[in-house]
Image (cartoon, rainbow, N blue to C red; front, top):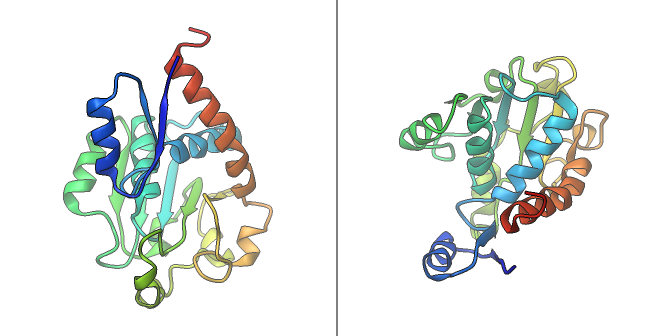
Length: 210
């Protein structure tokens, strides 16, 4: 069995590979999507919450590749997703409609994180400045003031809420050290589950165990 695993900057490269390859192509990361991270996130939430259908998730921060893939996966499984980001950094209305049509779940955008996290079972975030956006870092730090995931924000969610971060995390920026290193943090388990999620995907693609 052969598989090509591609970690690229431009998503178009993955699409060109898929269009011309005779073997399966796995997107390890592109500027548009990070599906393997989404699988690891689902596995980590499943371990903490059990059945995921009907559960609610808040994404606080930049609508990036991780946010997009997480939303796709969650809606497909019947979860309810709320995105929170400053104006200009959240999903467009067409993107929300696309996500909403993917499954039994739902997706919404509210600017303020305090509203987005209300009574949710899981809070996710990521760095505010992704690869290739380094020149925007200062502008993004200004735009995202007030979007740090803090203990106060976590307290607005459902009891036992978990915090999720695909790392690397910048303590004091998108997440406080108290939350990142606190008892509700699932970030280390997420990192570990990238291994298991990837192995499971590869086994599924090549038909092991089927």
